[in-house]
Image 1 (cartoon, rainbow, N blue to C red):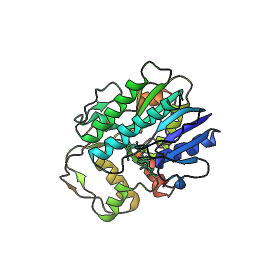
Image 2: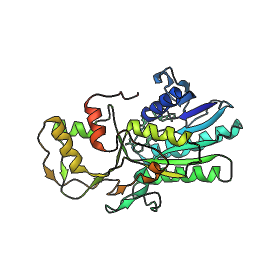
Image 3: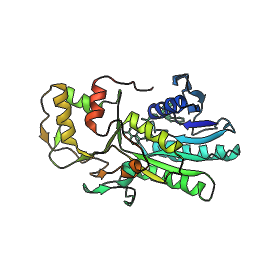
Amino acid sequence: MSVLIAGCGDVGTETGLRLARAGHHVIGWRRSPGKLPDQIEGVAADLTGELPPVPGDVHTVIIAVAATAHSPSAYRSAYVHGLANVLDALERDAVSPRRILFVSSTAVYGDAGGRAVDESTPEAPGYFTGQILLEAEALLFRRLAGTATSVTSLRLGGIYGPGRTRLIDQIKSGRAVIPDQPRHTNRIHRDDAAAAIVHLATMAPEPDPVYLGVDTEPAELGEVLRFLANELGLAEPSTGHVASARGGDKRCSSLALQATGFRFTYPSYREGYRAVLAGTGTRHA
Ligand SMILES: NC(=O)c1ccc[n+]([C@@H]2O[C@H](COP(=O)([O-])OP(=O)(O)OC[C@H]3O[C@@H](n4cnc5c(N)ncnc54)[C@H](OP(=O)(O)O)[C@@H]3O)[C@@H](O)[C@H]2O)c1
């Protein structure tokens, strides 16, 4: 039995390595399969074009593609057309997986004015990123409705981890500014994102259709920046006006994910960034 990871980049590769270690045969689809480690069977596939055959023993499909540019057309191409194409390939080859897991984003909730957000919160994306991801999710749920395949969307917060050091780089370069308005950040370490995908893809009871994938502690961005400056032994950034974030201000909860038995290795930015600063792990190409 095989697991197919469509769009197998940093999160997909870490997920695939964990599944391979647990004894699964893992196939990774991407345009540059040569970048994948030996534990994952890399297959050249452009999700927006003609797709290779889907092996008949694929029982789980994980879609972890990311858009290659920050534009509506690149997002629609990767998330909506790419996803539709994968579903077409499954139909074409008469493969009915037991479970499909789509990697989405908390961007689908838009701005919540700093309020708490969980799976019961109505989606209200204010920006094209969340709007297009929501369109992709709707397509996925519509196409698989009434079939034996269970569908789950894991809506991840901002991913940080090995080599994903945007905030650290801002502190080091002196470009970081602590917002003068409340601004929460909802984050997840790359390894916890991969672990959550493995957990949802393999857990015995059928998972729910939607989970938020964020650590246990939404934090003020200023608090995270002060923490990083302190860990690095650098001066605290100054406070000033920062243009409002596209994702808006919200406090996302992963209590539903935790209720399935999932436990975070990095429950907050503190443990996670300490590991990054200690040089733990590598970013997968
Ligand atoms: N970055 C964040 O903070 C964040 C937040 C929330 C959710 N997410 C979601 O998390 C997921 C995983 O992100 P990531 O960090 O692993 O991204 P990543 O490292 O950029 O991996 C995405 C992979 O998709 C592949 N890909 C792109 N276009 C493709 C196409 N047309 N056909 C086949 N493969 C294609 C790329 O490989 P090739 O170039 O070899 O094709 C790339 O390795 C994405 O769904 C993203 O939307 C990210």
